Length: 122
Image 1: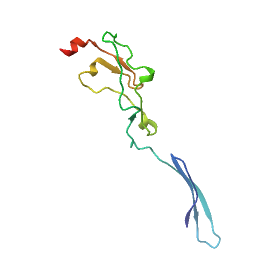
Image 2 (image 1 turned 30 degrees about the horizontal axis):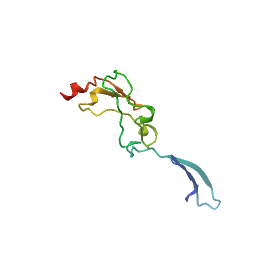
Image 3 (image 1 turned 45 degrees about the vertical axis):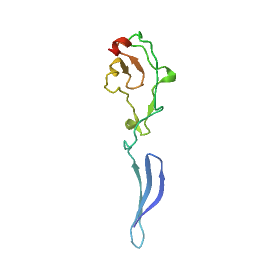
Image 4 (image 1 turned 135 degrees about the horizontal axis):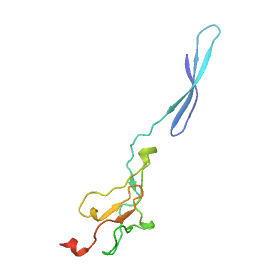
């Protein structure tokens, strides 16, 4: 005979006791605790805190200057646990992205190239 005698869980583990009994005239039994760890599945996409970010910089802004301030910091989060919830930022490889760089861990955007408007319009 096998029966579960206790049950508890949190978001990462399930724990229960299993009792095993024999059918002898003097019944004997033993108990074991089973812990089942639930591994996170990467089933959630990261989400930005805002749908659109805007910043303005003068065209003579020096390379390396920060584009985003603390109030305008690009932020995203992923509700997955552990390494599945770690977000990394990058820029799409289009014509304008070459003028900027982004810190893959913090999301901080910096000027990386010449921002001269007259050169861009040609």
